[in-house]
Length: 457
Image (cartoon, rainbow, N blue to C red; front, side, top):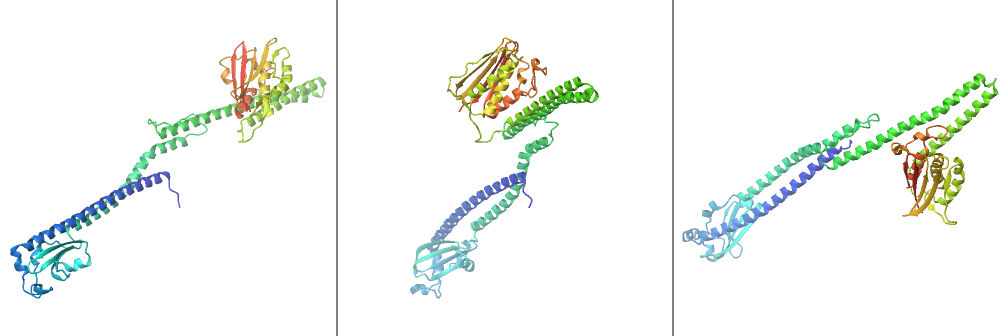
């Protein structure tokens, strides 16, 4: 069986709700009207019975009461048979009037007895005193064929007919309302389907009203923006990675041709080409390792998975190795008191990689006689490390791009001094993966200050 679409469900819901409301209202109207008509019918019967009582008490009606015949009663009542035929014109269709003595014997009757005996719906009784007969009971019965009862049935039929019409109208109204309400969503679906990988810059048209559809459109546009940025970064990453790998491969290829042509005859050319090839191979190996490290750092951290390390121990291991990057730069670092641990929620290898990238950059881009200072402290549950140098600095135009992959500032574009352009991207990815942050302030020609905030244990 084919599943119902959302629009059909909305239409059915609206129609069903409308139908239920109409049924409840119709039922309430019918029950109220029925109760009112029943009350009115009883009141009318009682009023008519009082009218009959007055007529029986009139002098002109005595002749009808003393009609000679074989009555059903006892005593004088057995000699006379009351004639109620003059009252028949006042009876409605389906009404039946009886006169009974004190023992319940019927003295006289008039009306449609067959219909009444089959279905008596309303009854009114009154005890009266009559000449000769004494105390008798007048009983007026209605089988439901009177005008008010007929009106009740007609109202019921009209309500039933109205209910059927309301059902049809509810279905049509539900379909129209659902189609109108879902029209903006259909337009949104059409716009979304037209967006592909080649036009991620396209955005959905937002409705003027600040309603749920506007929020949905804003959310999807925000998602498209993030996706567009991600695709652009991916394309730039592939382009930059291809460029970075293309250079060493071209160098290796060139020296391979040199070896083929002159390497066998010239040992000097062979040794020089092999040395270049080894350098470029090492450079490619480091680049690939950094790409794998970056990919790993950008993977989400699993819940409950986490290690704790001592930041002080990491710095003590790192600093003796990084000072050799530029021995002519002065290091200002006092360390921590012996035995004082700075625990952070990050594996030892990850913290070492972050600090190495930052500290090596500080030494690499600080000229002879400059200073690199390292300090750390605990604040608000965070371990904060500040690495500050008096190096070449970064311009305000370049500062927003320093965390982009393969980005190099003007002072680090030569292959001898500059790296692959992945160091800061890796550091940022690792910090964010473990809940930390990295912030860089720099002034061109004066130096750079890097602030690392680790989650403390």
